[in-house]
Image (cartoon, rainbow, N blue to C red):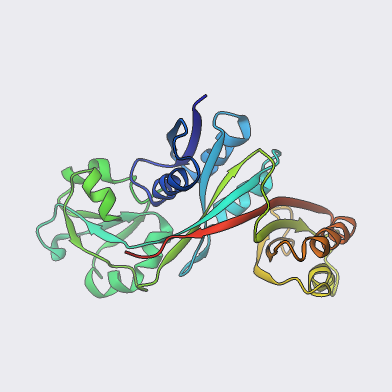
Length: 282
């Protein structure tokens, strides 16, 4: 049976590259097909509805931080999302355009994260160009050949796929730019060195969050990520996403901490334990 894998499209995105990395490391010899979707939310909803068996989504960038669409959507879904693996990819942005000179570029298209990761370069080299947000880094590439005064920020791989010239690369403001992606499904997750959990509190009281985080600190469990997101119910009310460093030696402490959190919090969503693969820059 063919495994359908959803990712943010169109073809050539960094999320597709993460999906290919996952298939090379985890699905060697298996029958699969990649299915692009126009947004992160649609990618996740395709998984939740059973259209696909696996989804690859961006989670966090080393420069711009969390991808909020991913966090918000996985919280809202009724399905039990389970992380199978984290994939960390080096991100090297390129300026792609048919323009003959940088001075002729009047607009630059890309995903908001990519635009932000290159903002210093854009300010220095293209201060005159409008920055236009798209759903992905490749959304504008199919029409870029007909736009002599436009450019897009994407990858060299994407430029080659769409047969478009690269005017400059790399243009990201930090050379060690990285993005973490999750491979997620609805199947029970495997054990690993990281556990991801999200929760909401019963009320906004002094020390409420500290008490929740204390369940982990008191057991010597380190949190590698803490993120708050608006609950979307009322101003000043938040959800909290945490990543907990785990291994085989502290799984008993983790289970105990999660049991305390379940009893204390309003809602707890455990996205499972998983391992991380890091792709080194080439």
